[in-house]
Length: 191
Length: 356
Image (tube, rainbow over all chains, first blue to last red; front, side, top):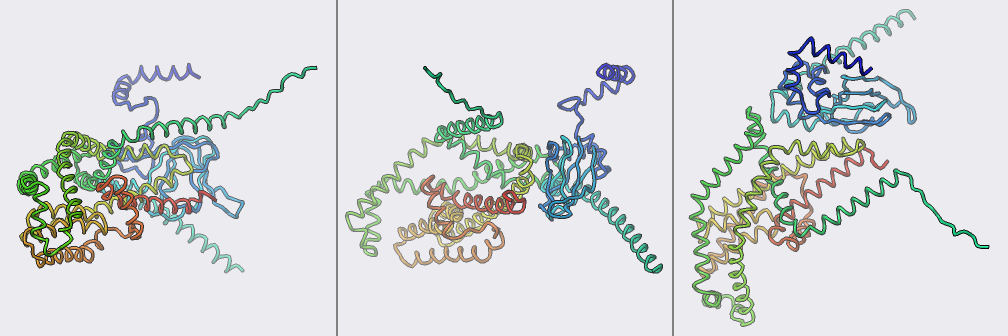
């Protein structure tokens, strides 16, 4: 395994000498680790952001580690912000009764959750639990509000992307609702 | 037959041992810190004052950042502006204020405490017979002597005050520049279960307190300016000095307005010996208070930090006992910090179901 890695490293070095030099010059602290900017770049919410804007956002990001089965947030608690999965997997649960819960989604690296809490303090609609040792990046409402005050241009851009994302989801939900209604209508006609 | 001595051995699990070790280390650290507390008091005061200043100046730095200036440059510009205003203020106001202070102190020196009492008795003896009482006179003379002696120690402490000012400026600058990163680092130490709660409580508390402190300062500035204007128009000596004192003292509820009004009334009494002048000054101060309470404070000072009058009085008394006038000034903001933090903690514990 390690020899294969070595080989890969060497081949990269041999073929892209120029790239290696530049990547080493601009290497961040804790070299070898993936930078926050690299993760943010692949999140749809930050897709329109330039390099300097992503660096600005990086300053607002909190890094958190969770052990397997540790809860990130509980359903019903006031929401504070969104999380992006950096490593591990996160399960989203909804309580169906007092002692039962249903898994709604399993999120992997690069996926995000809890973004509606960036807009207001209303209660979390589901719980998030780490299914294995996980690293997540958090962006929270206090930092977003401060960003809007300090760098309104970047703050607006982020809000615009968030609005776009929520709009897309609303459209999708409407379409699903429409299809359920039409199914119900057709079943009524048949009966 | 001799039985071998029985030995009882307790084997604690490693987790308990670790917890015990942590608590012991924490206890020793706290004890050690407390043993240094008296020596560290001035350092703590400077750091706390720098935090207050950073709270006040943060919106200004944010405003500059909003205009596209980097945080570092914005912090430097704010400091440059403060130094500029300080120099300009010093150039224009210092001659007036220092002249007033000089007049006050030379008045004290060339007459000495005894002469001062004689003058006071001559002027007011008829109106206030109590002043002719030898016991009262002796007591008052001792007080005046004490004040004169204290003014010398003030001069001696001037150098350390200058050093403290430079330290204060440096610490405030770094709070302004790196405050966000410091807050982030502080939050990173909070365990996962309490992380979101801590984040939102810190945000709410700092927002409310920031607004409260800035509001209080604005009110103090308005009251100070109005007092200077009123005293100047009434031809009261030392108008700038007493007006500025009244503005600052206004931050101490209930007692503050009295602290501001009493020197003005005393000077009006000494200068004119006329009770009519005293009434005019008192009416001017009462009007300023009325204006502040009806038209200024309700629109500026946040209601969410409002304290019960009894809490305010107890806080001021504790502040006075601990740190004198400075303690009285800090009492209400400190009580407000405790109130807001407690309120938000209670909200957090309830909503994040910490104890359920």
